[in-house]
Image (cartoon, rainbow, N blue to C red):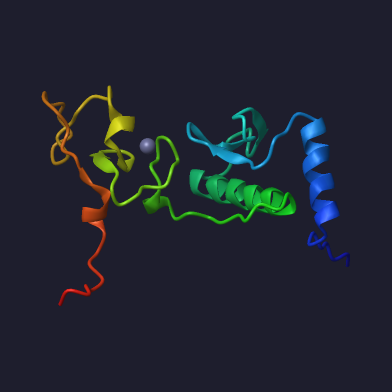
Length: 150
Ligand SMILES: [Zn+2]
């Protein structure tokens, strides 16, 4: 069994350079529109998992995440899997406490700005409604884990 170690900086830079020579700029990122597609840092598609759509979306997202972590790690990037509830499903950016968010009936918590232009629906009934969407600070949704002021 071959053990692969990529702790050697020369190996890492060679890996990054080889990919760059073939038009792939690290780190790889997941495509916000398609969980099965990995993009390079310039948002150029690199690979698609489950082209024939035979796997569940959940499995595909995990497989893509694992490939992303593996490739990025080989390139010297500290890779981590961000829990889905902490990222905006539209732009795939992490949700920060100060971000103004809104809840999309299908996608859950998104940046309010990312949802702009989407139809507004009543979260209870699913009926389209007029008027602005309800927004809130993402930090206000986080569970309270104790405070220094008490
Ligand atoms: Zn967003």
